[in-house]
Length: 332
Image 1 (cartoon, rainbow, N blue to C red):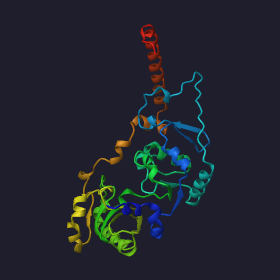
Image 2: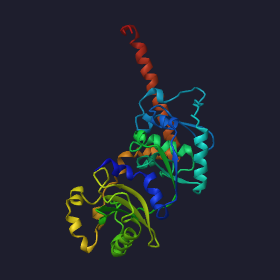
Image 3: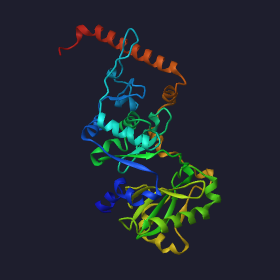
Image 4: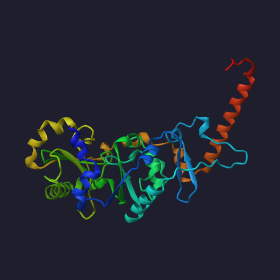
């Protein structure tokens, strides 16, 4: 794989080419001060939609709640307010873009989206209504937030409710569609089994009419969505190589030429054929304990109270032990 193939798959390159066949989007350059803030491993401070300040430490977001400095204690049960950083000009541009796209957006960078961070949002969704929502996702994400030095653009896509069973990944070699895989391969969707022929025909027609010979490379991967009306939409483009998930295929068979030789009968199409083939979601490793899900949704506020009392008790016990050992402690 060449560097140019990766560069050509960044959103700002392919979107102008296929704008008519994909979801409406707006591209905003990321100012250096915003990049610096997103790269900072310190405390995450974002202004809430009601102008209240919310604080999260990176260790909290990753499940490590043992550091004393992550919890502020107060006898009168008030919280310590930390001032959120301000980016007035960039915030204004983002707000205008969100409003232009209908009030809610799906955020991503040039190549990737913070899909591993949806657990941090109260609705467990990547749907954003403000810059604070966007910052929260990217500061939490491991898959995209660590690579901001490579991404200079924030992409805001008009929010659309996409059913996972309608998404498919298509593999193109030498400008020929050689394979199609169910995108959400961890689940079984009965309609795919029933509509296999129609799905293949729709994807092939979309490729030949709108994608084939129009992209900058002859080897690439593209994702599509087939809606309830049978219409196909382009969702994303990716490099043809191991940096892209091959899903139900292996890169060995995709690059060997065997699938190309079978092209006479159309592209190979693979999908989960029964409940037996259902697999765990690859995003499960980014999930948090059920107790914290309850806390984030307000289902069990007492768990938060018990947790804080436990931490305070541990802190007091630790202080007492230090005082008891004080006389024997070595000089600092």
